[in-house]
Image (spheres, one colour):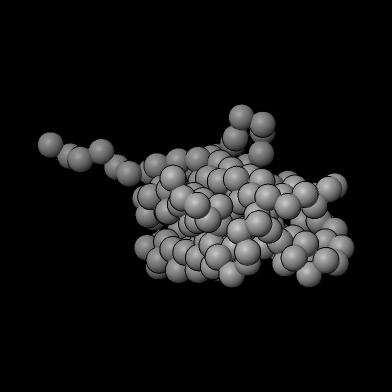
Length: 154
């Protein structure tokens, strides 16, 4: 267990990366989630990154005491043509670099403020701790593609 709730975001990124490293085996066929939305490796990486960026911006606004920026993402409703591109080893490496930096930035941001800020009531918004805990749900996007590790051939 960690003291800094921002580290939960780093941990969620690492769990997602375990799946992402298998995605160069993707056959190019989009996958459908239980709620009917389409996912591909590129889309899942985009959604994980966008989710972290969205909440990092929210945290910064809350700490600055200014209104948060309205959420106008198309989010999972949008499957862009780029989402359908083949997913290569290089794409996995780029995702690793991007997502690790985002997760670390989140943890460092939390480390830079007094821990009393983590649980301060910011109604109608969540506390900083609640935001970090919510971001562990970013793994859901990676789960929509899942592990594409190929079984070992005998």
